[in-house]
Amino acid sequence: MKPLENKVAVVTGASRGIGRAIAVRLAKQGAYVFLNFTSNEAAAADALAAVHDAGGQGELLRFDVAATADVMAGFEKVITSKGRVDILVNNAGISIDGLLVRVKDEDFQKVIDVNLKGVFACSRAVARPMMKQRHGRIVNLTSVVGEAGNAGQTTYAASKAGIIGLTKSLAQELASRGITVNAVSPGLIDTDMTAAISGDARNTMLQQIPAGRAGTADEIAAAVVFLCGEDAAYITGQVLRVNGGMYL
Image (cartoon, rainbow, N blue to C red; front, side):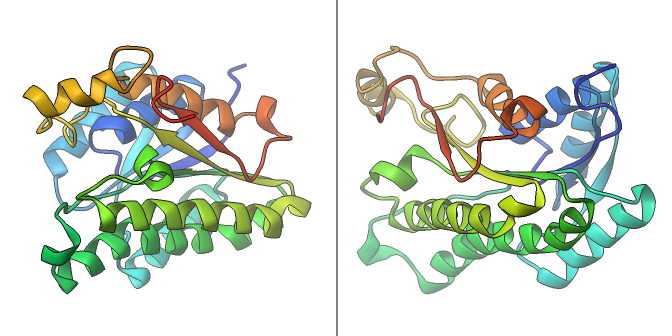
């Protein structure tokens, strides 16, 4: 029997990058995975195909994490279909970078709505079902930027730092019901989002990483899936840094 067999998981932002890697790894461990996406149906379908190719099971689940009503409807679909939700991975996120003096109000709000409000809305949607089950795993993706800061990323850093506070508070609320809430904090990871970092900027970042390289999406997925399993039952309210020593 696989470690996560008979478990139902939802991964937000699962169409590419880290979210896709998490979905595939959860499926390999036996979980039935709902792959959430917002707009790129082709990429989402490709991610689902990767789940199936890995011998796993799952389906697509389309909603915008920033739209509260859509979030509730999405999780109602999961509960109606499977009767439960055991694992939530809040991975969906965006970045609109720029110096503070140039950041537009609407860009700030959009980043907060997706990155922070999305975690809030999805976590609230699963809290009651998990409490009734007296079991659950919530893993939130934050960032090294949310811990250390980074010039030109005030909005992104604020959203990711907020996730850490939410994680620690929710962990205290849900621990007595057998539910753990943790965060994983990636450093520089090779994904579509970081592909634009090249040349001198990338070299400067690599010089700050004792491991001397960027991480992979699968390395982040491994940490997330560990926190979703029974071996992590006594770990809650923690931030697991997967950053090659970039921030200690």
